[in-house]
Amino acid sequence: MTETLHSEFIAQAVKNPDATAVYSDAGVLSYGELNDRSRELAERLAADGAGPGVPVGICVERTPDLLVAVLAVLRTGSCYLPLDPNYPADRLAFMVQDSGTRLLLTTPASRGNCPPGATVVVLGETVTTEPGAKPVAVVPEDTAYVIYTSGSTGRPKGVAVRHAGAVAMLAAMDRVLEGCDLSGVSAASSICFDMSVMEVFNALCRGGAVVLVESAVHLPESRYADRITHLTVVPSVMNGLLDAGALPPNVRSIVFGGEALRRKLVDRAYRETGAVRVFNAYGPTEGTVFCSFGLVPEDGTDEPTIGPPTADAVVHVLDEDLRPVPPGRPGELYLGGVGVAHGYVNRPRTTAERFLPDPFREGGRMYRTGDLVEFTEDGELRFLGRSDHQVKLRGYRIELEEVEARLTACPEVREAAAVVRGNRLVGYVVPAGDGTAPNGTAQDGTTQDGPRLDAALQSAVTGRLAAELPDYMVPATLVLLPALPLGPGGKLDRDALPEPPAATGGPLTAAGTPTEVALSEIWGQLLDLEPSAIDVQSAFYDLGGDSLLLVRLARLMTRRFDRRVRVPDLFSFRDIASLARWLDDESGATPEVVESARQRASARRAALRGRGAAGGGAGGR
Image (cartoon, rainbow, N blue to C red; front, side, top):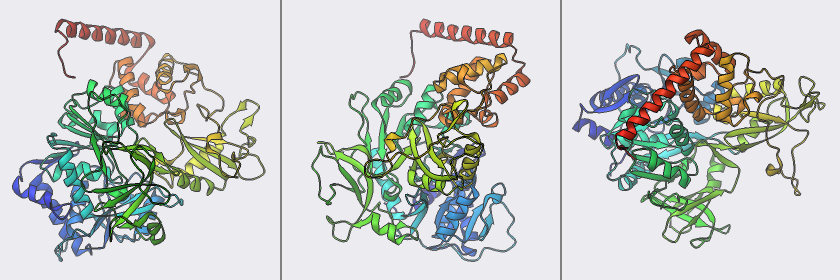
């Protein structure tokens, strides 16, 4: 087993320099090119002060430059701090300041997103001085990366993860993934999430290629999607890809993680793809990516477990008095072993609360996950839920308390609560002031037109949150209440919070043109809404849509209008009115044209079905 996260990549690059290391729509790099570029950049960073114990921020788009940057930082002995260029400026500034980062690595395209107060190194800029210091030796106990997670106190927490933990995780993956084709490993997770560590280094440390895409939603748009043989994906994302018929065709193994996996989806994955192995995995950032990992059999009937503990993990299932509970009994999951992180950056008190001495291993440490699990009789773990208010939404880890803290910090809000309803993060707010919302709406959300969500308050509050939080932490809907419901003990009763409205209210702008009517039908199908109840000026996200449904929307529109509609198009035109204008202006989609296109598409599908029947139904799984 190698000692550091990047050393096995270097060995692979020396052995096979001409092999392809990275496929990306922005370019392709061989192992030799990636090795040379990261070494040269490491020397430049070392001259600028990078070294052991020094965090280096990486604010780079999802191009091969991103992997050059990660490897270069690791080679200096520094740890990398991922900074998504799409994050709000305030959040990026907080992460940089909180972690003590004084050196940032970026590109010309993302330089404007870098917070002030740090030395900025720009990839591709001409260097007038010769690099001075050489990268130093890196040891397993050095921190490899710092990833910020949502914080229960309202402040994100930086988790410092060791090289030793990451290397041990990769070695454990070798055992469970033995025989899987890793020649094309999808890398669709942001480097702000630790699943990216497994995606990138599972390929680069084993001689495979990373297929770098913007996100899982953009898989259908990648020119290299057909090179993906091994896919790591969140269950809800997979549902969207399967519904849209957008899964890469050559995938042979699938790893699910990030949220609960159901047997129904496993059956679909085996039945509707070429996958011959489906795995389910679990693990918090504090335990280094995954700490349990198991093959889900194709012929099973029970709901999937989260697998047995990985070879590098020490797992305890304990009661409130830190006593082990027997199989079949629920308890809280505590993680020990080499994968346990150093702790939280500059948070000694929080670190002491969550990282405890391991009473079962002398000198050991264990991390209190807050997750409720039980051991099965055959040694696998079954996930039962959370013991606090942390949630997973489409694979993103969210502390509801952080969202609530940001809501109550808004001057328009006196009290707030947040919950997940279906696929939406919903905020409940009690307005500040005299009981009147900004436009005269009463606190109970009623007007002369009946209950509705106040648009002015929604705009003011979500605008502030969007400037402070990643988009997945901004409530899709706000509901106004006169007061938050409380239980007998005076605590918030989340179960008593009302169901949110399907839309944001206000006077409804109904579909007028034939194209708007057709789009309303499609939106209604996807969002489970009556087409007549859809406001053509409401954004898809405001009505309960998400990035996964956008994949299906693009496919349905392509079929309905007989023209290619891409996911990026739907980010540009967010409501029915603008989409309809775009379709009509670009394609001349009159009612006759639309109906003719639908008839032609129906005829083509019938012909294809006929050929399939004549051919004996041959095909993949």
